[in-house]
Amino acid sequence: MDPEVLEAVVVAALISVGTICVLNVLGIIGSKYGPPGSLEPLFSKAMLRNLSIMCSNLLIPCLSFTRVGSKLSLETMGVAWPAFIWSPINVAIAFGAGVIMTKIVRPAANMRRELVVACTFSNGVALPLVLVEVLSSLSVVEDEEPDALEKSQTFIFAYSVLLTILIWGVGHTYLDGDEEAEHRNIEEEEVDTGDVKYDPGSDGSVAMILVETPSPSTSGTSDGALTVRTSFATSMEKSNVSWRKMMYDVIVEKALKKPSVFMTLLGMFVGLITPLRRALFTPASPLKFVVAGLEVVGSAGVGGTTLVMAGTTGRKFWSFYRERKGEREDNSKEQGRDAAPLSQGAIFGFLLTRLFIVPTLCTVLVLGARELGVFPDDRILLLVLLIECAMPSANMVIILCQVRRLPVAGCCEPT
Image (cartoon, rainbow, N blue to C red; front, side, top):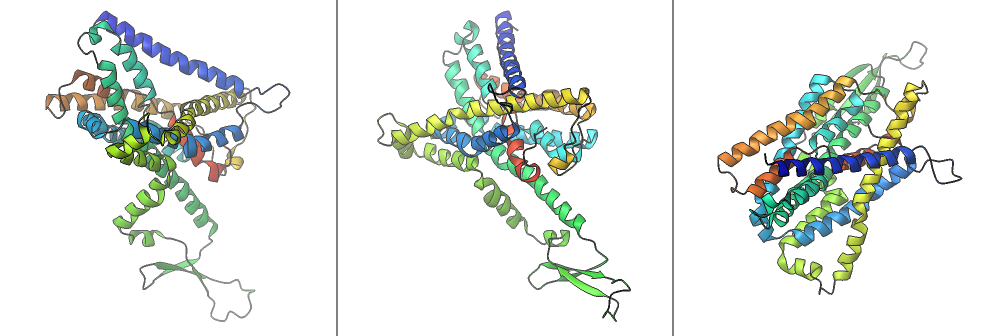
């Protein structure tokens, strides 16, 4: 490798790592101390919770719409389609690796889905943009590809379109499924059953009949049995639900109701229809003030998610510090479920998966597809795809975990 290229890559990586370290230090300070005269820390649980809700329901949707609507076009799709379709492939590989790793390291049940999501979704925009900006300015790249920066930004943007939908649609829905399963388990544990009989109804549903034997002291029970009918869902009822109904529930009832998914799809609709894109995003458009307002709101999305990440990291730091000092708090009652800590094996396993196994598998697949001529022989495209293969977890995962835990855990912190 050219020494100039190696030096630039190392410098860009160190800048990114240094930025994260500074943010984490600010998060640690803000999680311990607050404004002068205040007894509450700056990054309190309530503050992180409310900021996460604002990011997921307002800031990120506005950012997604303006970014997708202004940059997506049929011309862009014609050039950057490999990056567009690589996003779901990369996510699928990482998801499969994360699920397999849960079978190997067996983390605590209340953390499995969070770990899988952290392993699945990578930082597909912010960090790649920093790297390509540095690499594109090198003379060895600029001489061969004068428009390297513009092309690489186009490829990264195309990659991020479906990634955004997958994070807020599939990722959020996947975490919601864990929450729903937990509620079902709690309900089922609260039912004290005796003999159980199932009575299939004419509409395809299944009524569960609980036959309880009354105590000897119960009067008026000459037949020795009491029949109670209940209507909660059973596995038999689920088995009768068609795949079409399940997909409808997942896509329409859950994923499309996520504001970020809806606004991204709306941005794609506007961007791919040239008259609509020009009517909204050209400087001379009479509706430019609407887009300008959305851009102002959306521009705070990156800062908001960064603050949530820093604050959550800071709170976990002080939590570990208290554990070392013997002041560990029992959060299981507050969270409403077991708060088992992560083992070192689970931490190492998922770090290995996200930072080594998944990048290796994805890199082999990209290089193999290039040799087979699946996508155009474009060096900038290859560079962007390889960068996307090696990215760490996305900051949005923390937002997902913060928002997702609200109905169950109140204001608990994500792992």
